[in-house]
Image (cartoon, rainbow, N blue to C red; front, top):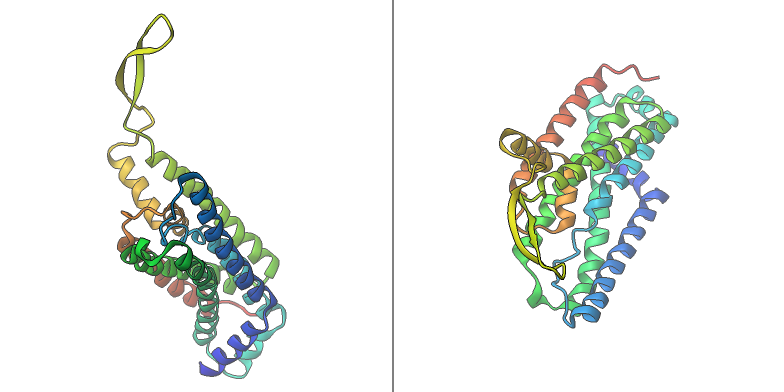
Length: 279
């Protein structure tokens, strides 16, 4: 196992796409924090909170993970590396875990590539006194475990599909579709329970009387509970929640969901990979 990890991390260090993602995330983190400071100073004449905008990377990490895993694992198949590992005696479980650990580490490095420059720029601009450290720590842990969930799902597809192009299409398209579903779920949950209906107007057109009317689009009962579960359960739903910066979000519950997804995807992946015919 140690030899597999050593070889995979050596391959990771040489990956141009990995370093491109690291540089891109670092520039993205600096840009978002600096632009937030400039706009807040311009329009509100104050400094933004240090913890704001630190979780924006959650919206893109799923796409980066899908693209990276499809390339990293796909190259293992196209170059015949996995078959050679089996020939020299490595178990399929060890090969699967080695790829999963390496890809997970790459995903976490991408998260840190955004967070560290953003925090480094935010501390002198915003000041430490504006930071909500409890929220920052909770957000960090939740986003890291969410990234592991993304990675485990993408690794599951990548280890079972021997075509790199197909793996890339399936993983990236799946993330896109799940994001669309999560944004729709979030929008439905954000619907107000009532809205105001105008009942009387003055001669000059000003409103003189209104009444609260039940909103037919507001989710109630079991349907609302299902939507709330999916909102926190799906990794893309967690990405939307983290990007919004909701400080009252159930980070512990979302982390438990992500940990469960990671464990289930890994177990299913190893079981199916053991039965896979490697060409």
